[in-house]
Length: 88
Image (cartoon, rainbow, N blue to C red; front, side, top):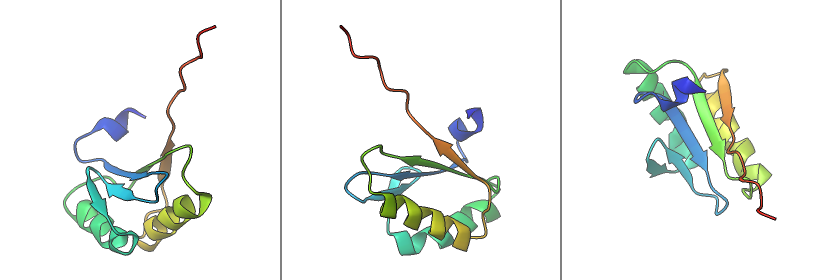
């Protein structure tokens, strides 16, 4: 998703320890909708890119999606990392 690399893209990352980041800053789940709405008001596209660590809990990812929806965003792109093949 090339648009996810834009400087003003709304990138949200969920890590296995349950921490969530809005762009590069750690944030509380409850503060996420307001941060998203503010970014959209400042000109970001109405799309969120969600990156979830493969070892993150399903509930943490679901909570992030719920908070994104509360911000009024319906367009969510999921970003995955390609795993490097294990050398033989």
